[in-house]
Amino acid sequence: MSDLLVDGVDTVLLDVPLVRPHRFARTGMDAQPVLLVQIRTAGGAVGLGEGVVPGGPWWGGESVETMKVVIDQYVAPLVLGRRVDDIAGISQAVNDVVNANLYAKAAVEVALHDAWARSLNVPVHTLLGGVSRTSVPVTWALGTEPAAVVIEEAMAKLDAGHRSFKLKMGAQEPPDDVRRVCAIAEKLAGVAGVAGVAGVRVDLNARWDRLTSLRYLPALAAAGVELVEQPVPAAEVEWLAEINRALPIPVMADESLRTPSDAFRLASLRAADVFSLKTTKSGGLRATAAIASIAAAAGIPCHGGTSIESPVGTAASLHLACAAPAVTWGSELFGPLLMREELLTTPLRYSGGDLHLPGGPGLGIELDPAAVAAFTRR
Ligand code: MG
Image (cartoon, rainbow, N blue to C red; front, side, top):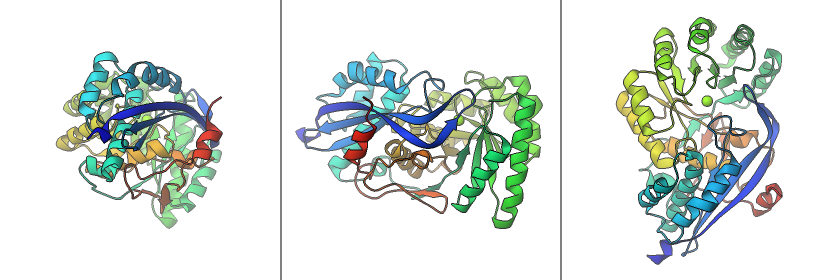
């Protein structure tokens, strides 16, 4: 049994270059910073986890640098010497000492699951209760560039099998942004008329207020946009509920949904018709599975969201998305496709617009040590 004791917690900062700059409403990035967490057991198992946010602290306040400090100084000492299968106990001990910092906690919690699963020689999804599916559809995220640029990128991705696109909004004044997105939605629907239907979703990343949302979102619905993600700030759940009632298409909660109690409140208010699940923003696999259960009980479908994880975090999110029956609205687990270089010895498998669950113990992935060394921040 002592084989299960944790005898090492290592963190290393990586910067993984992207195939193209990725733009959000008010910021962007050329490379994705990643905090790689490795938890070693006395029995020799090494579990992987990843601390990652979409391009910096704008989304939730944490960055890879804050995560490294929090884990090295406060979390690692609480994990060392404990059994990897005592995840509830470890989480309690960590929560007694560290408030919030859910991205940092997720990195450690995923690494514990991976080390535990590898110790048992089972996949991580077995620890989550087994699989409901073995692959998930992947929505491709398009940037905030002008319509012509975005349409050209979407065309190439249609050829690769993607049938769903997510557009970031909020970088321009609302009337201009709405005109841009309507032009894209109409063009993609026209092209897909030949080879099937491409869904178009938009993500406001909490940049609009209540009135702007009520004024401009109906035009997007009329142009064929199928879903609106988080138009208003995270705390404004009543606004979200009002907007959800006013629109003929679903509103998806992302920034407003971090914890199981957030999920309960959103479900009670019917503030969102779809939940975006992220193992990262919610502190790990267990809390995310709890959110998925609340959603299922409330009849709310879930979507496998991303913080633009490397293949490590993507594999963790994929195990959860395949294990949770409620994840029926696909995923946006495209992080590895946005990265210019591979981190694994065998890449995750994307085909036909889907991401496929890898086999093997733990997360089912192996790091390429040369790639890790090449991207390590100096
Ligand atoms: Mg989002």
